[in-house]
Length: 242
Figure 1 (cartoon, helix red, strand yellow):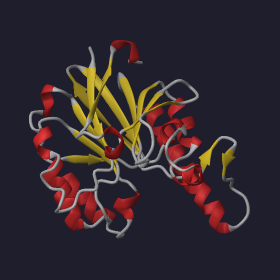
Figure 2 (cartoon, helix red, strand yellow; figure 1 turned 120 degrees about the vertical axis):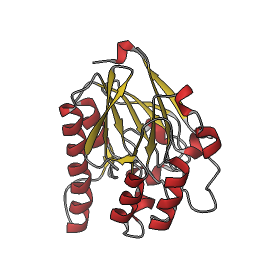
Figure 3 (cartoon, helix red, strand yellow; figure 1 turned 135 degrees about the vertical axis):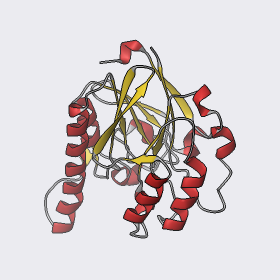
């Protein structure tokens, strides 16, 4: 069986955006088995904006699974935001997992927001000032959570969902100077620690769509400014199951 995954990130919904995505989401089940949202669901992370997201992406005819992004943390209303989304039937992941039944095939999704730090050969290290140590340790903890979640999933197909990028490939087009703030190689290591079929992320508005982890997992940047459509659909065929 082929599983169809619709995905988009960086929709930055507020009251001015409500209605922009919804027409394309009606009867989504004709095109996809699930919708994954790769963070930055809101513009500033307010409870009011979360209600707009719930209006736009709640009550669809397929399961909706999301992670948060940096914008969703800005106003320090994360618990309220998550509560609104969950009340609308949207599953929000942060270091945990969910398993969906897609026509008898179990789709497992592990999700974290992720964090920065950079990539092999040009990355920050857990050394020096407390602020730098805290920065890198945050990424390390989050990556460990992602890896553990992926490995412990009891499913047929694994998908990793993050906001920050796990590879530099999908950042091509962004200024090199900000790569350390767009993702971390530790996320790719976590993804490669399990038989993951697909990794989805957002965050890099000026980046590129396609990449691959060192272990060969395909990575896709689904930030709305990159894909330029309401969602992209990815097909995971039987050869991706494991």
